[in-house]
Length: 176
Image 1 (cartoon, one colour):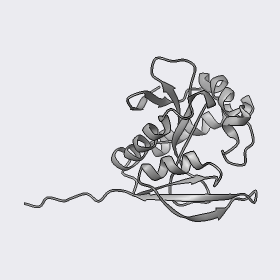
Image 2: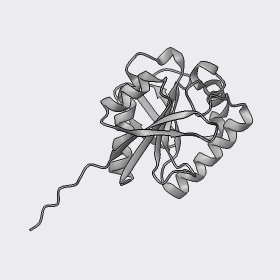
Image 3: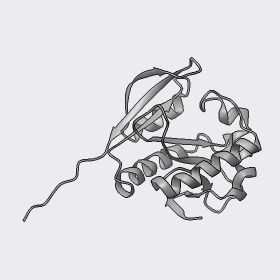
């Protein structure tokens, strides 16, 4: 399980299949999932499949969903990553933290690290984030990280999502 990134308080690493029960504790929590996707909680089988997809993404794309830990604390605090959605051209940053970790500035640490990883390590030209309009804390966190709201889209389930975007920083070329 490779370490993907580290912030002052967080460690983000690749998932293993052994993480499925810990991921299900996160994705089975109604409070955690209320602003994720269509708000549906996930059972152990769906969490296991999600990890399998992530393992394939690591091999094929070099990124995917990852396990998030507060340094020195067990169990898993949440998940984060860069994922590809079938209906979207640009990769998307995702994250969710267990409620006991909310309002501690962890998302404000995590989001810039995800963006930096996507732009610097993966050389992605653009990243997006989709956020439920009611999730004001996440909207503020991505805005603090420099993402701009590009509008609203309607999800397949009929719910509205705000779409935030950020282009990769321009690289200065030094000629000789």
